[in-house]
Length: 71
Image 1 (cartoon, rainbow, N blue to C red):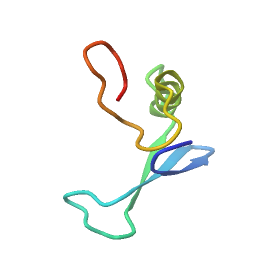
Image 2 (cartoon, rainbow, N blue to C red):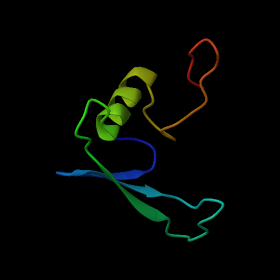
Image 3 (cartoon, helix red, strand yellow):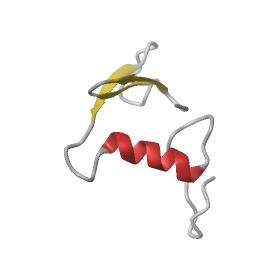
Image 4 (cartoon, rainbow, N blue to C red):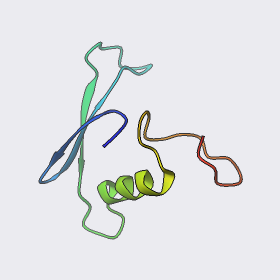
């Protein structure tokens, strides 16, 4: 997986986010993302996004223009 440091677990993902405006910790913050119990599973949605966007390195989420092109 690309982007922020991620760790796959049986229950889903743990994503380590770097600093933000509100959290200025140097080490960042770990956020658990569990598998969903419906068709709106956030872990599978992230996997699909990475597959269709062609993102191999860098941030997960990027601007998308009005023509659907990922920056």
